[in-house]
Amino acid sequence: MSWRRIRQRLLEQVSEALEMPGDILPDLPRIVLIGDTRLFVENHRGIGVYQADSVRIGTSCGDLLVRGENLVVKNILPEEITVEGRIREISFLP
Amino acid sequence: MGKSRWGPGGQVVVLVRGGNLTGFVNTALSQGILLWDMKRSGEDLLSARVRAASVRDLRRVAKATGCRFRIEGRSGPVFRWRRLSRRKGLVAGFVAFCLALYVLSGFVWSIQVEGNRTVSSAAILQAAAAGGLTWGMPRRLVDPDRVEKAVRDALPEMAWVSLRLHGTQVQLEVVERTLPRPVTEVPNDIVAARAGLVREILVQKGQARVAAGETVRAGQVLISGVIEPPAGVEPPPPVRYVAAAGLVRARVWYEAYGEAPLVVTGQRPAGVEVVGYGIKIGDREIISLGPQASPFPLYKTETLIKPFPLWRNIGLPVEVVITRYLKYERFREVRDVDTARRLAASEAFFGLESLRYPGGTVVDRRVEQVGRPGPEVRERMRVEALEDIGVPRPLGAAN
Image (cartoon, rainbow over all chains, first blue to last red; front, top):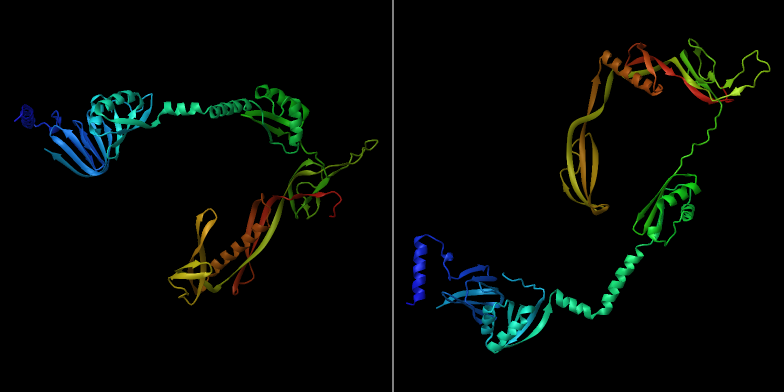
């Protein structure tokens, strides 16, 4: 187990013991999906693949694969990515 | 968003071509270059928006990632201004238009005259021109006080003149003097409208011909418009003719009859009604609700037709027809003598009211029965009233 993974596990356990919400943990991606048309990803690590039918967004938990139609990266900022289009599927790739 | 998309330099649409497009995007991101509205337009094509100020940095990113890009479009105030500045004729035309509007708004282009009834607008405008108000003159040279005074001086019929400037429009509001009409006095007498006993006489003009306590007949001269000179003055002054005026209060009598039958038969509403509804389109009645004929042997109908107004006087050719059938019944009423007398007296009273002059006061009222009560009762009412009986009559008219 890598040092990063150990650190993350530790942080998770601390936040659970203190009953803190999970989204205050650093590095963990926060994903907000509005209907099937708009997706916000905070704490991302850049774009892996970008096609009109799929976008791969790097996160601390692995790559997030967004599949759909007419996908447009509406915004790309150091902290946040906004994807718009007809979103069909979201999955984490190990 | 940390940085504004709309920098002072505007934004551009770039079309990026290359195999490592994701590397291009991630490198741009790591260098703090904002990209938005990214679209894949082909296998190795990506279009995105970027601030115009970041294009130079983006070129470096493209070089590092082996991509190429070209600028497809520009938007923002700077580019718009640049485009506009190339069309010098348009700008010059716009400036000329603004200038012309500014210069031309400094002149008087319309003069309106309001409020004149007998004096023509042309005459007022002519008088105003003498005071320095002309069509097409500069606004700042209009002197309202001078123009108003000129119009008042030139036209004595004007009681009030007001000049107001509304932009390029001058409004001249005038009020004309209302001159009293010449009074022509027609000599007349005051004569009695009806017979009566004079109680009081008050002469405003003319000569009294009767005195309080005298009985007069209808048409008799009460106040004469002929003023005869006093006797014994030498030489006799001429006879004067005036429009006699004054008040002659006299006691006058009125009489009226009223009768009421002891037995009354007839028809009257029974207080029962049935309502039928129908909808009419044009001349045809199509839907009917409720009875369409009267269920009563004795009845009256009231029909109410209501149109559907849509808006103002535009309506549908559809009407609702409401028919009311009011039930009537026969009746026979036997009155006692007192009731019949009271009814007869009130009939007589209403008959009198229509005879009397307004403004008089009733002094005495008497009711007496006429004849014996047969099938009907007759009552006579006599009223004694105090009224002004004088009416004007031109001199020389027949008695």
